[in-house]
Image 1 (cartoon, rainbow, N blue to C red):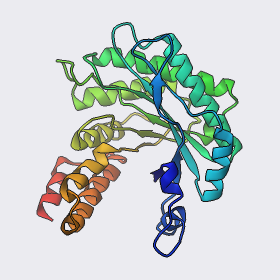
Image 2: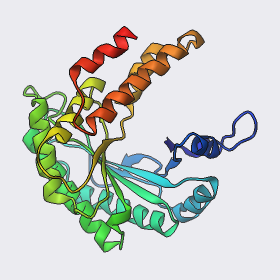
Image 3: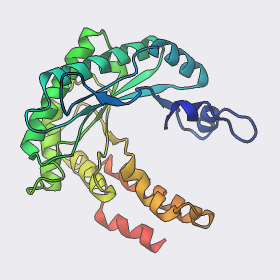
Image 4: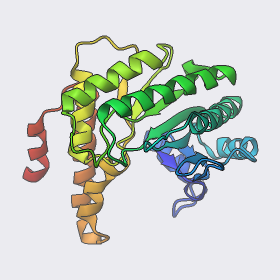
Length: 278
């Protein structure tokens, strides 16, 4: 579970540190360490994630608190004449520096170069920009002496912008994403997890399933690290009312079950009826 600075330092009612509560439930505690995407100087419309200052000391503290992995999110926007090579270089350099510091601290780094869905760009343009970003990322990781065998990639899917009039099919997204990853990601990487990036919960599951259902031999397992696409159904059910907690728990369990099946290419649309029948 990815925590924030304030949550990793919280304790349960009996005084047990929150990471220990998670560990006893079989859940590893992770920590988000970037401090957010800020305007990139000299690059209108582009962002760079900050948080490298003091990171070595923060990681040492998080390790003592029980963190076993960390996450740093970079934001790549597709638009007119962007992303620039400058933006991609600035973000991938920061990701690599963060990853190197994580490994120094004994923490597994998750590197997340998110290519945003915002905009009207085509699937093909998303492919090109994702390819450029991943090539730059792994070159930066190599330059910073990061061991890819001890690193996880949190990747965007290759998908048309949400305002693009021509949306790709589930199979087209799966095929384009796999083709892009095979071009850019070293086989030594132990795993890739996908972010949902604003996709609907069912569609994100279908895309992941289509990638894992392919007969192509892949060097890394493909899994999920969804935020909105995992939590949204539960939050919608809960609505902040105690009386809805049990139903909300069923909703998040169902979504997790569907995504887990998708990791093996075993998800079926009929599974969506299970939550309705529960």
